[in-house]
Amino acid sequence: MAGEQHGGGCGLNLPATADAWLDARERELDWRLRRFSNRLQRGRLEGVELRDGRLHISPARTATPPEADVLADRLDAMMPRVRVTELLHEAARGTGFLSAFTNLRTGEPCPNESALLAAILADATNLGLARMAEASQGVTRDQLVWTADAYLRDETYKAALARIIDAHHGLPIAAVWGDGTTSSSDGQFFRSGKRGEVSGEINARYGVDPGFCFYTHVSDQHGPYHVRVISPAMHEAPYVLDGLLHHGSALPIAEHYTDTGGATDHVFALCSMLGFRFCPRLRDFPDRRLVSLAVVSTYPALMPLLGKRVRADVIREHWSDILRLVASVHSGHVAPSTVLKKLAAYERQNQLHLALQEVGKVERTLFMLDWLESPDLRRRCQAGLNKGGQRHALTGAICTFRQGRIADRTHEAQQYRASGLNLVIAAIVWWNSTYMADGVAHLRATGENVRDDLLAHTSPVGWEHIAFSGDFLWDRASAIPPGRRELNVGRAARRAA
Image 1: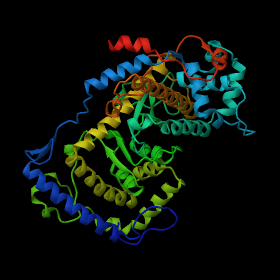
Image 2: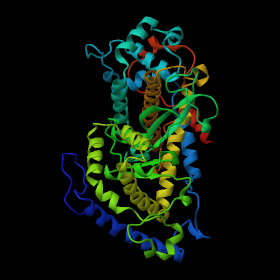
Image 3: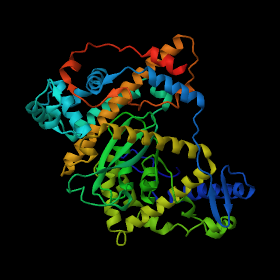
Image 4: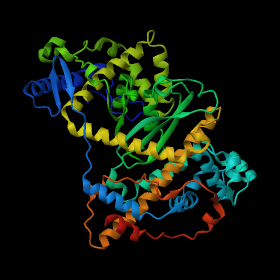
């Protein structure tokens, strides 16, 4: 951007003056609107046309080649059969994530790995400590209660998850699914067994039962790198940036996808100013208006699509406030969700809310033009959101006890459930990825041409080969010597025949 850069140690490439930002954005927006108008009139936009003053956009298609489906089936068939207890022990050895769970008082790691993994799995499966002890061999209830109290905290769950995500990011096969620079986020609803601090609210989208949402960020490599419990009655948008800024892993996220629920003009503004490209799939896209910094009549062919002119005066008046807010969010002094919720609560009286919204309208318009001009962006967003959907399916397979209803009353306990579930999913993704890599290596060693473009359509989120229920044999799992399991090569051959 043109203009003197904003200092203050925030490390962001932002102009110090509103005029510098407005001048740069006005030039870019004018050029983009003129180009879009020309292409629209000439019918040169793939899947986009203007009929009766309204945009019509063809749905994005992310077709999977038949050969990719065959390859995915073969790799799934080759996966070793494993108990979840064994998988967690193997993932702990391979990633070292258990060392992140330190004692609250001494700072030392947990000496009883089985008890720690059992406590984590009790959160993930919604079984609870007492029932986990009853269903387990090798750990007792007292061990689980003491271990959970001493080692399971929000910060240790977060640090352990980052260890797994980073270990997975370092696997060569993970690069087949993505380079770790894009991600998506979405909420998943869980019904509550009781009314509590968060679960008492009802949202018509999910029916009349009270509950809450686990709002999860998933990378293009399928790693679930952040999770937050939120009320289903709250807008998801304030939490988009929480995950992008405070996940703790080494993922270099640059582009992020959500559905309509994660999108507001304020999120567009903050994402852009913090260096993220925000790309939501907007269900109401044709109803949203483009904006301009020039007089609206400058673009006569786009008049049916243009809304009111951006209020540059409001942006100028509050530019320094915007910069301070962005710097505070970037430095971690305040959570983005906290800022956005406060701005929304006082929107009529708060001029900063209005100024940030005007900035967001400009950034949203630039995104909408990208969306209309780029079928690849539309497909990329759809593919990213599909990966989050695959994670939701695995969640349903793990969190099954108590009919999937989470009875915890406090937000802290609910967050532990979400964190345990997310960590176990990340461990499964890492473990599956390592054995999928073994399967690919086996096929290539036997002379088969396994192409990376086909591997890109596979996924490490399968669970058919994992036993989640039954007795939890922690003593047996901990006694299994280190080493690789044998692939089910014979079963894969039968599947391919």
